[in-house]
Image (cartoon, rainbow, N blue to C red):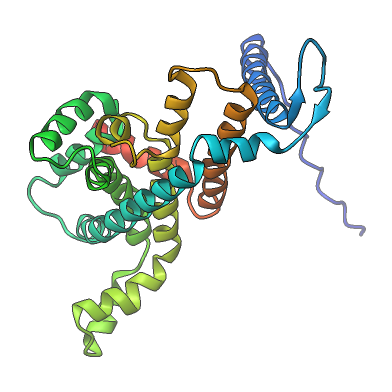
Amino acid sequence: MSHVPPPAPPRRQLTFSVSSWILVGVVAFFLLNLAALIFSVLLNSFASSWFATTLPSGWTTRWYAFAMDSFRMGRVLTATAQISAAVVAVSLAVGTPAAYLIARRDFPGKRALLLLFLLPMLVPPITYGIPLATALYKFGLAGSRGGVILANIVPAVPFVIFVLVPFIEQIDENVERAARMCGATTWRVFTRVLAPLTVPGLLAAGLLVLIRVLGMFELTFLTAGPGDQTLVVALYYTVFAAGIRPGQAIDAMAVIYMLTTFVPLLIALRFIDPTQMVVRMKREAGA
């Protein structure tokens, strides 16, 4: 008796409603305009001149040299790197133990504490940036690099916590218990067991905090002195300050800024799923 194979399951056909096509069209239109904007800035930064033609009439890299020299980009990039590194280091040092306690312990007021950590991430920075800057000026901390670092730490620490908590929750507590049974101290368990297992989370949290600091305009603008401006604040002053500046040089500065934020973001997305953090934030906010 011959074996008759079972019938193949019917193929599922994709059906699109009118609303789906409208949504796809809106998203495509947005992405197309965004790509055109970025592409035009990139082309103009390399254009020797560009007037009433589809493409520039010539190409040059001198606008990048002009931006580095005239806009003191070296000083700005150094300040940006130092401020970003300090904020990332302090945020990880403070946020990692806090994330461990939240992931491993239940205590009274835990839900309220998580909601408190959510506030700097959900509320627009300008709403708490002005009173924060006022307090920093009152104690003589604003207008300096230390003041910029302190201001940016406020939203960065909660960011680290909400990134690391899911990573720590995925680590089996039996691993820690086994290490303690073998005589390991709390510090050794943390540095020799937990830290290696949470390296992807630490790296992702550090990179996302770096991106946040690079893109944080309000807090840096309110607390920075003349020599402590990050790249985004320096770009704002370059565009809106008095005087005439070549548009190509400003676009070259914008391209440098886009690269400093886009590259770390691509690296961070290799280690973290953004939906994971968003789902947790919604769960805590709705609880």
